[in-house]
Length: 403
Ligand SMILES: *Cc1c(COP(=O)(O)O)cnc(C)c1O
Figure 1 (cartoon, rainbow, N blue to C red):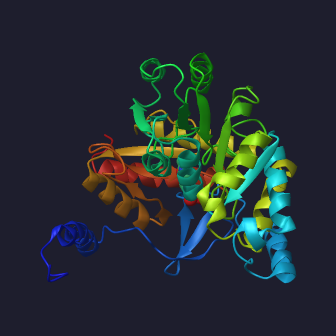
Figure 2 (cartoon, rainbow, N blue to C red; figure 1 turned 45 degrees about the vertical axis):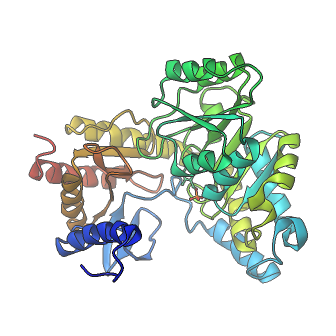
Figure 3 (cartoon, rainbow, N blue to C red; figure 1 turned 180 degrees about the vertical axis):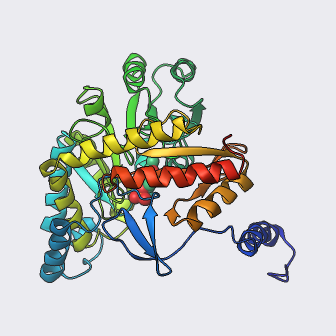
């Protein structure tokens, strides 16, 4: 393939990816970036004129398209328009931003909160504001890419430990000399495997070694805890996280990221984190949508309960059919396939039966652990989940993933 005339490292790196993509497209195994034309309540979507069962959504509580949330967004546009006057610090702050931050602080049971324009940017800017050269940041090996990038950008000494291994974390903490600033950071629920961090032991270790604790709740808001408030509620350990990070783009059907915590910490981030100071404010419609969504979660607690029941049904049903779903106990359900090609073949077979599910392959996951990364939401009905599992089972048998 002759993409570019110059034969340098950039060209070779680019061609390696482009050749892989071309191979997948020619074999009809490319399923990424498919445009969805209709959402149909979130449990189904329209793709190329076909209705498909949606099993790759992050809208865990089925809130995309909720009438109250849509209405709030429309009213915000009518009142404020579609953008702001720039960055929050200067002319970009609206009363709506303040209201959203108060709503988040109340939901997360903290004193204060600050928002940014994406979850990715939140991790980049906050980790690199909290720690820097001479400090230490200690991260689970399966933490999200935005955490890894934030750690690298910070310039702090970046120590990683085996996934969810608290002895390994303690060894790292012991290796740091007293008096150094230490930030321990972890996903609450891991985005590729769906398992939760050993939170009680992590909290103990942070106390014992005087480390700050930052937890990314992208996949635990609305998912963990009786009322969906997240991992502290799940373990009944309120007030134990120093830096509670989350996104407004998954359970919350908007866009943006937030940090909730003590008012001094938030005040500091508001005046020291570069993504707050140098990047424009969230637009009014998205702020109003996010604000209303937190209220809907509390007003409609059945969603959290239904999600939990659906996840249980999906995980145990797949395990009973012989699939390896790793340690998941949440709405993210990895269905192990083995090598990348089997994950692509499984996806093809399942998508041909109108189930929208996507593969995750190396380097996003280690070679040999390629998978379908399925998600279940509160929008699904038990019959629909059963139907999807039967199709996945047939595909698994056909591809030799299960006997
Ligand atoms: C999705 C995700 C993010 C990034 O959030 P965006 O709002 O999509 O930028 C951060 N952390 C984790 C664990 C995520 O899954």
